[in-house]
Image (cartoon, rainbow, N blue to C red; front, top):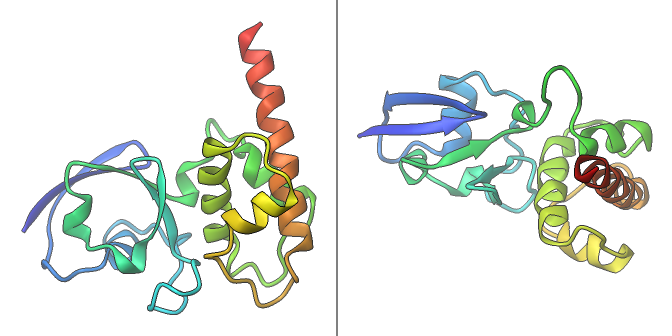
Length: 161
């Protein structure tokens, strides 16, 4: 099947097998290796991307389902060489250990903060419950999400001036 998909702002037209998973399309066809393959069962969330601005586990979405839609990967968050506020918050709060879950956690956090720009700890934990981390115990991940919320609110206040 022929698909036309916008990934990180670039438009791609490709012929794909109808059964090709979005995660494999992103990694193998487009080289978007920041989207990692974790469990292949949609349990871990490591492969999370934004599809039309909403987080999805790309191992449970077919590439053909992304036809005429926009996908944002972790590589697509940075703009003009500057990390996205969520990426920066994860880096500065050490919200990673091995880093395997980090791309999915970041993408889920972006979606969470788009929906709820000022979540409390419980709301962050609930918003990220579909993503598993086997290393950190989540404390720094929650702190990073709340730090990113503050950063994003500050950016919006500056933009309004």
